[in-house]
Amino acid sequence: MIKGFKDLLDNRDRVNNWMERFGVRFGVYKHGVFNEQLFPFDPVARVISRQDWQYLEPGLRQRVRALNMFLLDIYHEKRIVRDGIVPEEFVYASKGYMPECEGITPQGGVYAHIAGIDLVEGKDGQWYVLEDNLRIPSGASYPMIARTITRKVSPYTFATNDVADNRDYADLLREMMEQMAAGRGISVILTPGRFNSAYFEHSYFAEKTGAVLAYPGDLFVEDGAVYYGGLNQDEKTRVGCIYRRVSDEYMDPLAFVPDSLLGIPGVMQVYREGGVALINAMGNGVADDKGIYYFVPKMVKYYLGEEPILHNAPTYLPYFKEDYDYVMDNLARLVIKDVSEAGGYGVVFGRDLDAEHLAELRQLIISDPRRWIAQEVIDFKDLQIVEGEELVWRKADLRAFVVSGQDTRVWKSGLTRFSRNPASFVVNSSQGGGFKDTWVME
Image 1 (tube, rainbow, N blue to C red):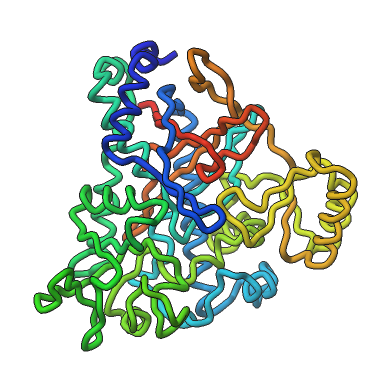
Image 2: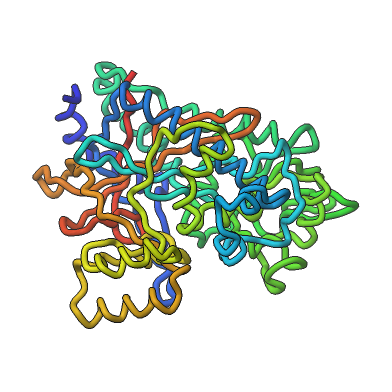
């Protein structure tokens, strides 16, 4: 039981008011319209025991190490494909695979500098990985700011509970960025700007890490290097590391989308020559493809020679005949995911479909089996949230953050997201969910 639990409940309105004052928001585009809203915070923290953390931490470190090795391999020697562990169709047909990244070796051979690993705890007590996010995983700023505010409004709670301090995430980021900059120049955080869904996080991390917050047009390439000019490009500063919050395809209009106004013309050539580090590396999407997810436990065995500590949710690939037959026979009780979607979109529960829509889904899988994965429905734990004046139970997941530089370190906290819909298993903020602080007990 959390000591000071009532104190947290009594202060929930104060905390959310402070959140609003600090601009803790996220934006969602719907039908071409940008809607910005507060990210609802629930005061009842998720508590992870010391014993559970001693299981999760090495498992997360192991998984991210294997994924980094996969990315280095897939853009160079491709041993895992040649040895038949991962079919080449799952690499080269992936939307996240970028042939432009072939042969590029990022600083230190690190691709996924920041990994967001989504897990749920089943009612059987087993933790399951649902998804690996290796491109631009977001969300760490929310529990950081929530902890800062709740410490101020309820100091008694943190004086009486032995909770791991989560303020070190900014230090993990700063140290990693300095390692990747390798003395070449300053670290910057590149934001698409005010109307990006995670703009609060971009500005918050810039403040906390001491990095420069750069906007489109602030960075430019000259003489084989990247420079920051800001409003006055006559006073340029060499850039060694760019923590980019811009998607791969918009990073360089000379290499990708030609009319992109968000990126830096020529940055890919500088990156290829080792003149600047990009965080996360370009081309990571091939490793967090939902189809590739199926193979991550095999990667752990292949690259590390170890048994996986963390388990995937039981997953089936219609690409394989045996799995295809199983999915066709059990479609009405499985959860089906479109590998090209994210943010909770493209997730379909067979049990929710009538006969007509089930038949339509079946035909989609038949016509393009590579596009889909199927999973058993994990009955994961509900957590208590405050709704009005009552405590109710809702589904919740955990996004754990792993930072990789010269070594791989797991942040002793995380983003717990919950569904506000009692009938929903989808917890994403873009789908109307809220978030909690995550307490790892010492």
